[in-house]
Length: 207
Image 1 (cartoon, rainbow, N blue to C red):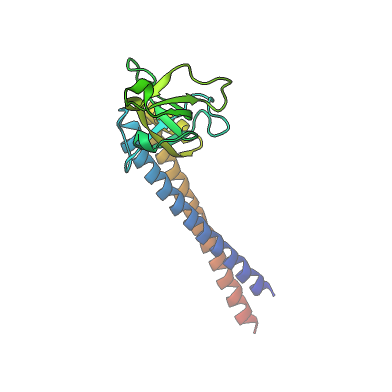
Image 2 (cartoon, one colour; image 1 turned 90 degrees about the horizontal axis):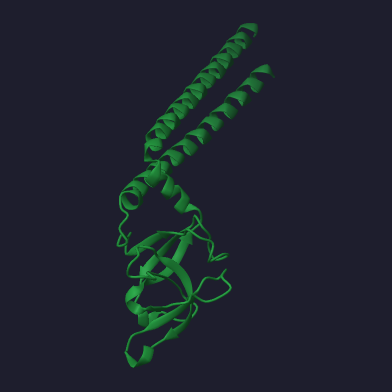
């Protein structure tokens, strides 16, 4: 009975080690991929023309579009012709030629031929705002339609941009942590294996 109990304990530790190994590898790979992507595509460029696979990305700074998305989220915008944008679509645009700021609001009205100029204009509104925006957006100021957003990713990206010098120490600490965990499981597994062998030898001698 004593030998069986020890064998079960040894298997349990072995399974725990395998689970730990899988989690560790997945975590390290995901973290590494994210850091590389953030550094190359996000932190390294502040240009309004930055894009990933044709998508431009913007960090939401206000809660004007709650509950659709909120400050700290990141929206991914696909360049879209003005003709294909309709009422109800969420668009990102530059509200002023003298500013580098961008807004992401919902289209409440599409004017296909503004004052017979042939120019398409849009009236917009933030979902959380009580009134529509006080200005019209002509098609030349429209970046495109929002395709999807990732909650709170913007906060992480901003952290990478502004506190990039924390990333390397963090990676080093995580590496040390996982090495220590591996050493712990290796040592634990060796102790269990030695204990099982000792019990087996004792049982053989008794027989």
